[in-house]
Length: 252
Image 1: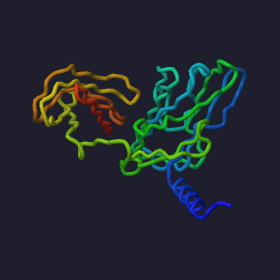
Image 2: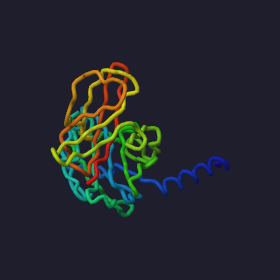
Image 3: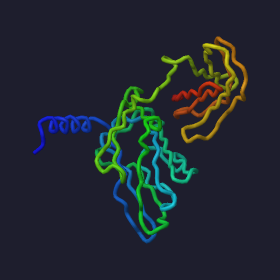
Image 4: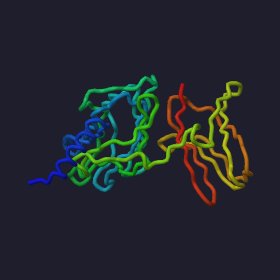
């Protein structure tokens, strides 16, 4: 017989899940030496951006493709599979209106070849820093639940553990320059330091780099080529003492 405290905890967890986004990897469909997984969602409400990582064993599975993309504008380019065992996914609702789907909706499918005759395990990365989910009035989700081969019951991912930087809360700003089609990155150095700067998209593709140089204390501005709006980018400052990454959503 379950104790009262256990029952209360179960009720609290069920209520939390009823309000939170739940992502599931489910329904492995085997045909010959190939397996196809469904990625589905519950409580997918006014989602503007979606970013996360899925892991698999490259000795047992070989990635083939994603297919049956059900989110508006989703295509093969939203997935980076260059690293064996890792699939990085990033999608943006380019209408910027937010996408809402019924519970149990298919988002897309992932197809693998089975190297050892079994479909092994396909699981979400649990590190909070790999997730970026924007919803509603351009607010980042504080949490979500995931379920997969590693966690049959939904497990909580606490996204408040990640440090989200925005122009309002950090000392970095992004300014579009319509004259020369470049963008200016303005940032403040609290002390003199030698740093390099790298701009990537959410799949890790490098878009622009600034080699190591000394930045004195105070405000600085660097120019980078203009990038397509309606997407999330990563701006990384690397020095001998620290590495800081800023997630930037560039709107239309």
